[in-house]
Image 1 (cartoon, rainbow, N blue to C red):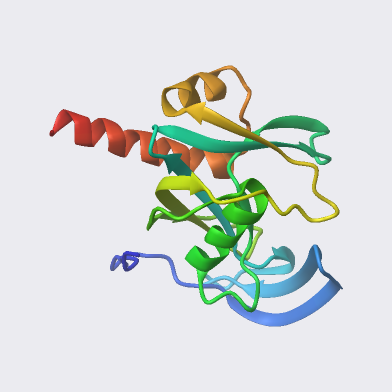
Image 2: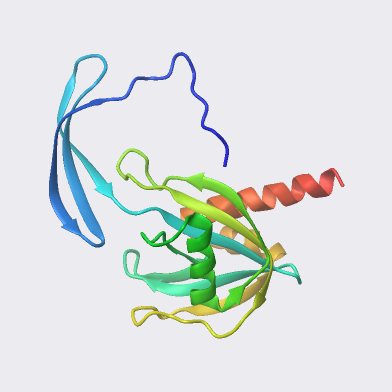
Length: 195
């Protein structure tokens, strides 16, 4: 992971004058902050959703295929292709451990060479968490998936060259999946150009 750069003219952080939690449930923690901006102006009601960090895995087989899943998403009431993904649990030693666990549980694939691809935010203005995206190369089927009782997942092994078409055709809409896939595909193009 790279160190975040700062610049001499970066804006200063806001001062939190008061913080109140409006809801604290496993999938909905909402707080309301009263903040003072560096110029002195105040925002009396600024809402932030708190989530644990998330992970996803760009998992590539030795045959240059990507492991994708499909599941129903009630927020948009639809089914699309996605990367295997999940939450970094408190007992996870780090994001890569969580990503390995999610890949194995959701798809049955494991092993390979793992590296950090990127860390992104779903919405840095309104959400507290980050998404750690991992690259897993040369993964192999290690056994059956171990879905949770609330999961109804279908596993698809797709040639990597088909990913752009899936995105272009609207078959993949999750921005937190498209960003690391784009990063991965750009790095492939770069390596091929300089090979």
